[in-house]
Length: 171
Image (cartoon, rainbow, N blue to C red; front, top):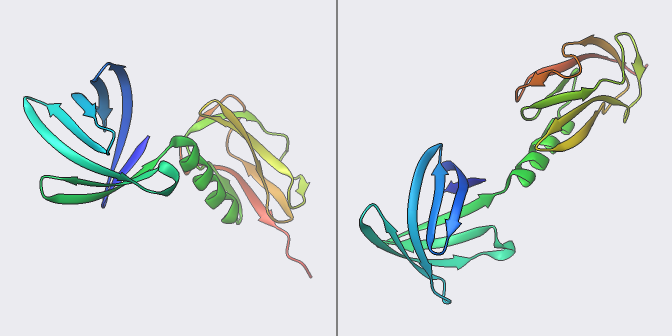
């Protein structure tokens, strides 16, 4: 999951949890902590031989917290991968223009069009699989398939152009 702490963005993955002992990675670096939670939102954290106390106030929806620790306060937002994916996908749909761009890394599992095909707004142009979910990418305007830059089975990276389009201008 992605965690925003002020201006910092960290990629955090839970590796294991056994009792109070938690193993995770933060930006790929392994971290082991011992956390004891109290019912009132306070917690005690042991890390690297040091003890820390933190107070957490949960925001609406349970995906944000205000954390106070060592006379400092932080606002923390938790962005789960599915929410991030849907947000990126929505942005990709809104700015299609003359190309279809992968919003995140994935695998091409279908290309139901050919170069030269005339498409109408809403037609599917490519199917990607990412995070074990398949998503249909549709054109948002009438267009002609100008160039297909990927093939089925190919892995793609975020922001990679998949298909180039020629928009049909209304007369």
